[in-house]
Amino acid sequence: MIHPTTIALAGRPVGRVGYGTMRLTGPNALGEPDRPADLVALLRTAVDSGVGLIDTAGYYGPSVANRLVARALWPYPEELVIATKIGAARTPDGAFRPDTSPESLRTQVEQNLRDLRLDCLSLVHFRYLPDGPTPFPEAIGTMIEFHRQGLIKEIGISHVTLEQLDQAVRLTPIASIENQARFGAAEPDPVLARAAEALIPYLAYRPLENGTLLRTDGPLRRLAGEAGLAPATLALAWLLDRSPNLAVIPGTTSAGHLAENLAAIDVVLDDRLRRALTEGE
Image (cartoon, rainbow, N blue to C red; front, top):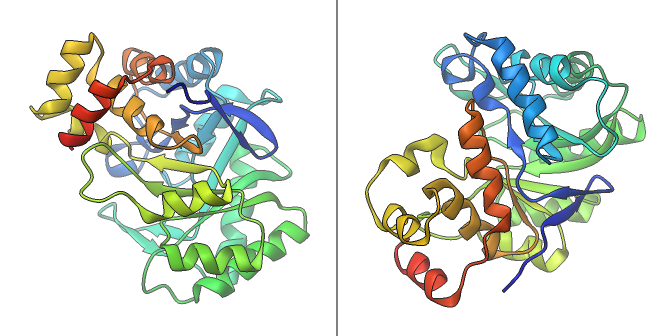
């Protein structure tokens, strides 16, 4: 089965293999990277190679990834979608904590605007974390207000359950959902099926489990070898095969790995390989 190579996101067609910026920072997505000039060059290579979606967040660094994106790509190509996230902050050990008061969310939006050198953010995902100080519907209400004020163009949600997706779409149009999905996950995310029904793009973050998925022996590595593909290429192709509304946003600091990731868009799984991959999850 041949699937579409693009999805519609923020009013534009973008390729279904995007680029996530979390790994552009220091260890644990905190602080400055060792080779910023190399990463600037890599971002330019990604866009020159056809990447139409950059997924980032103000809390990567914090601000480090966004500033690198602006340094590399501003002024941005008209066809490029830059998606960012708000709703979280970082702890000193690199963990995420909720940061969802209306005042904090506004501060995060304004910081994203400054760091990315934008007057309006094309697509902003509200990242939900449990035990935050603000109920989920109230946080979505704040996002709606930012939209009315012209600070953000499209509203997305991230790290959400099926119930939260249903709550959100009752309040406002949802441009995209960003949840984790990867080869070998114990259960498929039920949000993916609902998103497909509603024709909402689903952005799969950490699709290679930050590279750990590729370092283990198992059916993925064996089947990739038999197919003449890199394991990363096959793992991403398997995800893209699951639903035409799904895109992947792997991150990398390697031009070689970037090429392997982008190659997934051209892979068409036959029934035998699809079945072998599904049975080997």
